[in-house]
Every structure is written in C-alpha cells, then in structure tokens.
Amino acid sequence: MSAETIRALIAGALLLHAFAHGRALAALIAHSLGRFTASWVPVRSGLFPGLARQAAARAASVVWMLSTTGFLGAGLLFLGVLAPGEAWRPLALGASIISTLGSASFSGIWPGSANPGRSTLNTLVALTMNLAILVTQLWLHWPPVAMFGK
Image (cartoon, rainbow, N blue to C red; front, side, top):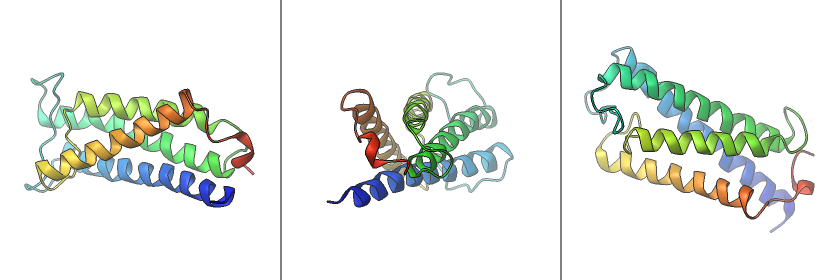
C-alpha cells in the first residue's frame, strides 16, 4: 500500500471517528433539551447513577464535544490543513483518552443509538479505535513523520 493511501486511510479514520462522536454529541444536545426520540437508549452514568437523565446528557455532552473537536482537529492536522507537523499526535491521544473515559463513565451508552445492542456495538467500535490510536502513538510511534502534514 502506498504512503498516500495509508495517509488517506488514517486521516479518514480520524475524521470518521470525529463524525461519530459529533453525531452522538448532537443526540446528547437534543436529549438535554428534552427533544429526543423515545426509542433512543436513555443516557445514564454508571459512575453517577443518581444523576438525572438531562444532567447526565449535559455532562456527557462536554465529554463528546471535547472528543469530537479533538478527533476533527487531529484529522485535519494529520492532513496538514490546519498546520503541518506532529501536533495531531497529542490531540488524537487526548481525544482518545477523553472518549475512553466518557465511554466508561456512561456505561456503554452511545447517545442516539436506537437500541441497547447498537449502543454496545457503537461503544465497542469507539473503544477499539481509541485503543488503536493509543497503541500506535504511545508504543509503535507510527506513522512516521514523513507520512503526514505535507
């Protein structure tokens, strides 16, 4: 696979991850405003079970907003759109950590999911992506600098 193809796949994965978090953020905002579909999986926190649903949605909104912004910025930085260089790495790492903590705090509830099975699947996909980012950046130090930000 060519370096350009790998570069496009990495940037695409980061931007898709941002999109998924953004979609969840939109559902959380709707939920916190009382505009949600009854079929959605209700927002709740496993760490703070006494939290009212709207309060949980507002708290989760902050987490998903930070994650969405972080992954979007990391994808654009990786492409060299915002600025060239390695700035995408700490942004991707930070967004991955925040996303993982958010997923753990909200007990596998992926906002806007139509049912518990889909919510669990979305959460597992997000956690897998977060783990891939953490492993490639902290242990493998991949991809090399020559591959991004040009």
